[in-house]
Image (cartoon, rainbow, N blue to C red; front, side):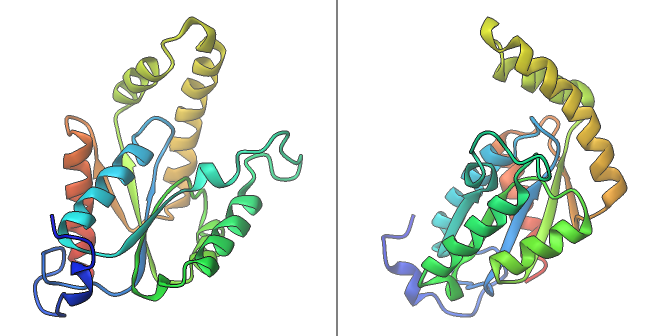
Length: 198
């Protein structure tokens, strides 16, 4: 792993996604249904970027809207997340040279456009996809506490519903099937795919 500051000395040469290449400023949004591994993959994507010396910022969109109760007109608090994302980007004085990794759900092309405007750089949307059985296994592991059974039932219903929403929307550019892959492998696959689009 390069030491801090090494990224500023990288040249423009090299293949996309390799040490020595400085990709253009852009965002990579990891989207997908609940339980598919968006946030975990985001963390591994950041580790891969660090290994390549690529300046970046990581944002879990869910963390930008964690208030309660949500407004009736915006139950998933998309507006709050976008406003907070725009503020975060405005406060990042080095944002012109950064890759931005995002994890969150984008349910239609209009929402994608709003997210693109908030992040302020070109954006590639990568949908993480898993079989229904794999999503169920992941959610069962995540909510195995007896006190979380009500939440588990909600997430199991929401996973099916959201998959159908994403199928209809077609708001993504690329798809990565995460079945049988570790989070690190998923992140590497994402990097390989988006690297081809430098």
